[in-house]
Length: 544
Image 1 (cartoon, rainbow, N blue to C red):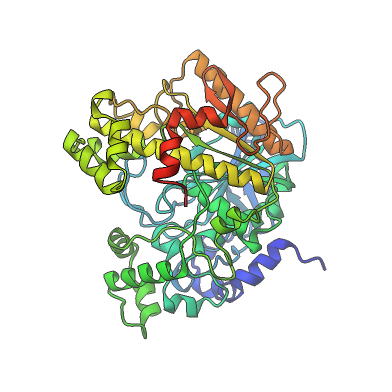
Image 2 (spheres, rainbow, N blue to C red):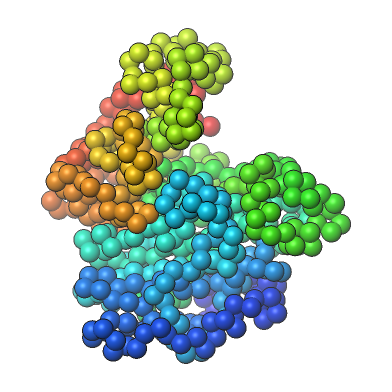
């Protein structure tokens, strides 16, 4: 009998947890035999199609252009004894599962994103969503799996609506939930002893692998090609995607990667254990003897309260799941041989700086700007202050945002250089400054000049957080072009678009695409260096 990579993943990461499913997961009983919500003939012909998966049949919903199957469980609910365990296989169900509504998001706090005004106290959250063209031209379409951002403490698959992307390309698009915050990334001595498979500190990473294994096993039934899978992520999702490139247990589960506004980083074991011990103390579980029972007895609300003091976020290297630091592998030219798109936005930090100061009613003053620069760059404060004078900007807050954005852009240049030395790389900078910012800040109605800030590029590929942004005609043209590049890469590993500028493979000190409406431009590494003052930043604050 053939043992698939999916089977090996479960054996390596969750056998003990799988054995506990029958007693630990009440949701199995909730979905077993659950009838589909709709008669297949309801509405119009083929309105509610049914697809068979390895666990049972699912019923989705078809519209004129896109058919969706939402809220499909890819693993057992990580509750009870399965909290802080590698994901276990989902229980099979009888009948047809209604897949016309999203599954619950993972435990997380509040934020300014719409839909997150109240804390999410749900743990039953390991669900994914599949979208496909309603009338595909092939039964083996490329597959695009989206790894959401959110600082590894927030976000969900439901935040991304890929309808625009699918209607202008042909892919099967998958969005996933994974555990975030302490639920996904906690590492303590007790959890390490309880997880000899190396899952401690990397539960969220293993969730993503379980979703990819589900794709390998099931996506053919949805019209996707399991041998043509792109894993893409933004911000924390990009960093997680880089970690997947470095994880032996993710090998073979995807064929290429896209990194939006995120690098390659992971916590050291020492840092993760120290942070985990602080969390355990904060939540009242400092005694090592009953630590596991104590931790698993806490409510999601108590977990959220503790992680606001002792934040838990991101993968840990040094175990079986992630043996080596992804950054060190990248620097050594040993991270991956898979094709990669890597890039960011020109004004990455304006969003976070606005959120930290003006949004909370504490705008940066000229004196605060001087103090921030002196604290961040003590040996080069005068040079940085001279390069970014407050009176050259709309406000001192914007000046500080430009400082941090340029520093990051120059570090992104280093990331591109390192990635290109390792594998076939296509690099970009999103620099469309005149469009509406992403949904959460656009709806505030502020006149703050965000420029091309963090997350802004996503709206040109798909709708984010339930809102289609009001783009100009030229910006729609740019959006169409970006979708064509991304879908071509998903199809073949090359972003090759006939009626658009050729996207050159990035080589050291070479050329990349800069996205500005109405069309991408081919620009040089030197051009990006000059626009962001990298002669200064490569000396004052180089990439780690």
